[in-house]
Amino acid sequence: MLKGFKEFISRGSVIDLAVGVIIGAAFAKVIDALVNNVLMPAIAMIFVPDFDNWLVFGSIKIGVLITAIVNFLLIAAAVYFALVMPMNKMARRKAIKAGIDPEAETPDPQIELLTDIRDALRKTEEADSPGSHRA
Image (cartoon, rainbow, N blue to C red):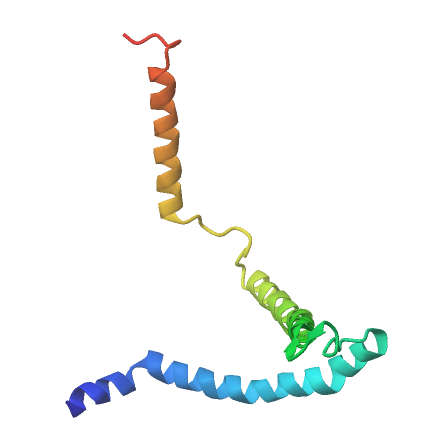
């Protein structure tokens, strides 16, 4: 029983997952600082991203949901443009320097097979159509 647990814990995927969770938790603080102290104050100067008191029906506050959605979209856009795009550009440059063309990926063999099957079925349908001449 302990041997199985030891094997489970010592697998690389479990350790990678643990490292990912720890790094993710630490990185969440960086993202929170960026969003709360840089992005949201800048956005608040341009827009008013607070719809909390908008569309209130008794205890139902639809504006709070709208504010959460707007904040999510703003945060997602900020993370994409501030982190994802620059990292993708760096990865592309690194791949080009290494002589790898990131655009010329090999197609999935399953997709190629399905394409061949589709083309064969089309040829069979064309051959069986009423206007065709079969020997």
